[in-house]
Image 1 (spheres, helix red, strand yellow):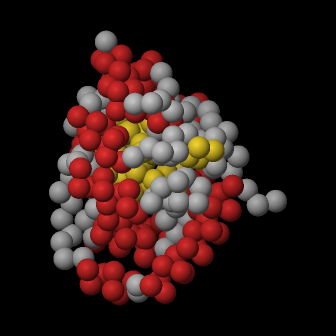
Image 2 (spheres, rainbow, N blue to C red):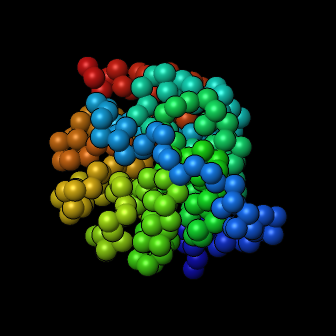
Length: 261
């Protein structure tokens, strides 16, 4: 039976084929004139006291709509003002309610490093990310071969983008390579969408110490962040915890105040 991740990836490949009919990868590449990364995702996390990566996400396959009418201009500036070390913006429409325009608008509203959160299965998407204003891309080990992971990470480095490699279990440690900047442990199983933060604790010591580590999903308590920091994590990707409220920016501010208390 097809799991959720397989369904998302299959749909993503169809989308990219359609996009290529409109503009080729060579045409995308020709539009890129600067490969400098003005706002480093990795450096921002390394220098942050809290490491909170606040995510803009309207819906998810597991929960459906979280904040259907959320507007970039009403969330992103306040994420930045209220202490986000980095911001993750979903660009998948079918399953997460995001758009390319979301990322492009977010870039115009903040100097905080932006992560393009999507399911990357083709180099084409890396060029897109650069042109949309991302500072980092997400590579999901569960949807890529080890060879593809390195190929995409090399291309991202060439274009001046940081790479967040997401793993879910010990088997996926083999996807880590020297072109990866940050290793994230997703506490949500992408095949079932069941979440358990225990995954981050289990993998903490197994990720090579020369990589900055982040924990993703299922984090809702300041104490959990404190405990994860104690075992070596420097970044914490949180979306639903803020987006399920009427005011995500304020929810972030309150969480960081609690974290610092």
